[in-house]
Image 1 (cartoon, each protein chain N blue to C red):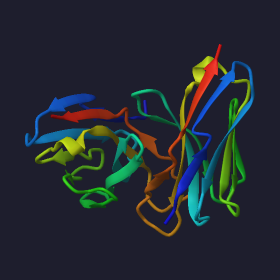
Image 2: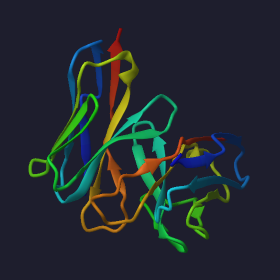
Image 3: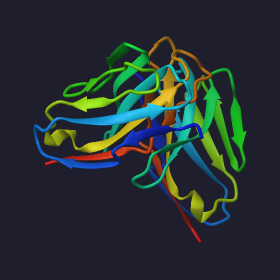
Image 4: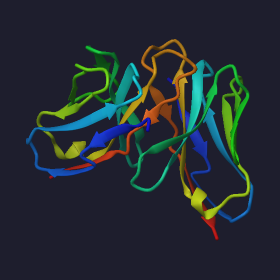
Length: 114
Length: 115
């Protein structure tokens, strides 16, 4: 059974710092991995999708990497800003199933202090 | 604007009173699904639909029904809500199932409280 873990559960950094969020999964047979951002009481905003054949994806100050063989992904945020404060979730879609079900980690709560 | 919409955004109801949460997407996506999010349990899939008239159970389907009569709409029905269905509900959609290209898009969420 696929399990997704995110470490740390919470992180507080000063503005301007570069930071890394970690995501690990137990079954490497995945279609893709997606990073989301969730603001308090709000919906999920897709940040990056990494297909199983890819090693990384970049969008602005965000860079996500994928090491499928070791079951790990990282989300790198450069030059953090207070507006980056949110919960970050990673989720995988298992290969071989037709359900497209996303299996989520429990999230990392990020606070960027001005 | 490409989006997934849900209504209502907030709902307080009483045990046993049937309710429907609507979900609509304007991206011509085949695949739609419902999740609930609970503290300590994260997001779990309730039901999904691979296309019109094709629906199936997710991980936590008890107490819920769905229908998919049109491609754009995927309502979630609680025929007899109970307090343990108090949760934050999300609708999601993606182009097709079983592909590595499929980025999934979520609606803004519906916060449901059942008294």
